[in-house]
Length: 282
Image 1 (cartoon, helix red, strand yellow):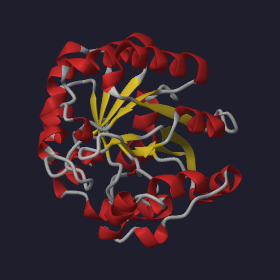
Image 2 (image 1 turned 60 degrees about the vertical axis):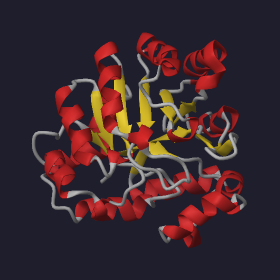
Image 3 (image 1 turned 30 degrees about the vertical axis):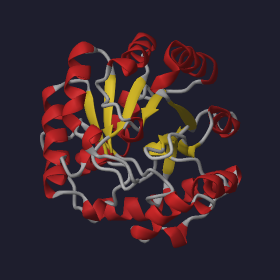
Image 4 (image 1 turned 45 degrees about the horizontal axis):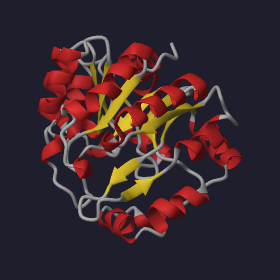
């Protein structure tokens, strides 16, 4: 499996793992609930990339995550753009940033997004809408989408439910429908498979040429049968592998993909080709 592309990964340094998880009681409790707290570990950049070489991962999209606390109205997880840049500049052909956005920043946030894309090679934005209390098709987000479409960048939106203590209603994949209609040239990735509304995500990905599904945050052995069937048949060009590291381990995830028994062409598209095309690596 040489050459895999992780379409959505968290930051991997010890400092980021400690800040966002080990020293963050709420997030640590979420990892403990799914049995992942004991595996939380950060890596120095050289060590992390050596591990990716061993596993067969070529490129990763590193998210400047901004998860907003619904109860406290402050950042819950927050990796800054500068923290992402610090590692992408070390491996400019392998690590690429996704800008986390706060819709309340308005035009200033859009200008910052443009700077990150133009000056630092960020491949697009990442949105975790649940804590902001605004669905992804809310008007506050549209200037960000417009800027990404203008610059040929990609929009990655965490959809489906969230383990964090915040409402799940804004994670329904149908919220992507109007965005895809309004921005037909904007590549939109429905991250986290859209679970438990996977069939809704599949319907939108099949309907819109510019909508894709990302598998981040879910171990392949738990993917819904409908998603696996879609990947292996008519949806071969519509789904891309991701981990949401540190939630999902790269080695474990790729081993589980091999166990799915996908057609060779479908597997290649899932773990590399689709992401390469959508993010402009092809």
